[in-house]
Image (tube, rainbow, N blue to C red; front, side):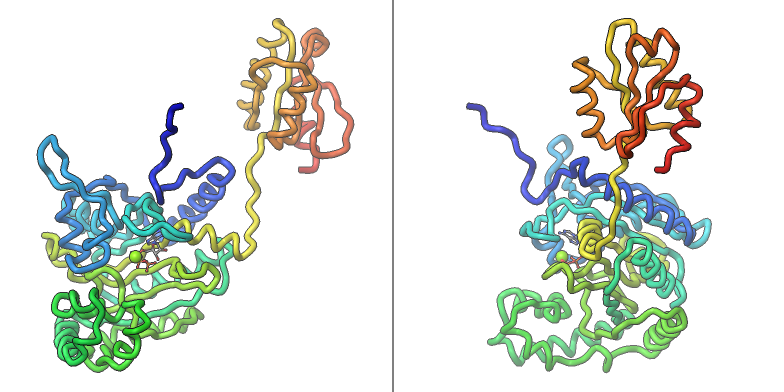
Length: 422
Ligand code: ATP
Ligand code: MG
């Protein structure tokens, strides 16, 4: 017995009965992004490993344990399947000097790869749409990104999302806060778990993100970032909130919001739902003013976010959004050698007219062909036999309504079908 080859754990096939939901999502997202003037950028799925280490940060979950890194044995390069899209986008912007032409509103969509424990809403190949605004320093663009998200939730029929925002301050205030955190957590050294101990001196901010219940009290009483914030960051944060209020966007300030990537400063935000269990964050982002310089570009401010497509699709379904699977307009059943040429001609000219047409292949009785026509969900069957060829006509049979079939000239099909209530 041969052992069948299976897909890799945590990497899903998206089958036709599901892929139409993805197509609907992608179409909606494309129109939504165009409405705000964002343009698509497409980067490779593989990058030099160093790019992600330098951008995401060495002491982060992603770089420490989630990256698919391998040696390209043909030249000994260390390569990594992208775990997120911002780093690649920033690399491309620098490499092609896109900011020379002015600030850029960009987006990308596609698969990302992280070696995590697969579970509902958490996969090893998952998909994101990422939106990045590069070269913009002001709080207006931070607010724009959030306002656009809110519009997308409406377009997708998603309700009940909670918006959490925070500010991380500038590099100096983060350094100050970091020092205070280290001093504080040092006092509780004996109570820290393994992860936190390891991060104590490298990335103490990440300790705040710990999900360990035993750590929560120590975390709760730790120094607050708000006390270490610089004035400019506070003003920036206030100005962004003003726009959000003006635009009627509800939000909660969560000063404990720590993003899993190191490159953020100032604004950070997450959209969270209670409807998907533990994997509740559907969209997250923030400002990353230092990143371009950090990966070798000229300094430039930037802000962006990424959303998880799998989680958003699941949420759309939770929220009861109904999307109907597209069906063919016409399924052509035909029988007889001399009929086939005519059936082909009919199918092609109907497609010229803009109909979606399935031409039956493989022969079989009219009855079995009609069963197949019905199973496709097509609205009409078109029956072509010797009689039709002789009369140079076709017979149209509505499959979804109790309407009698009728024989007409091919050029009358458009009238007949358009006349039917859909
Ligand atoms: P989480 O806290 O759930 O691990 P994250 O902070 O690692 O999320 P980001 O790197 O901010 O996630 O990615 C943005 C979005 O991408 C997330 O909000 C989520 O919707 C989605 N996402 C991240 N990791 C996965 C995954 N392994 N499977 C499915 N979706 C994911
Ligand atoms: Mg994660």
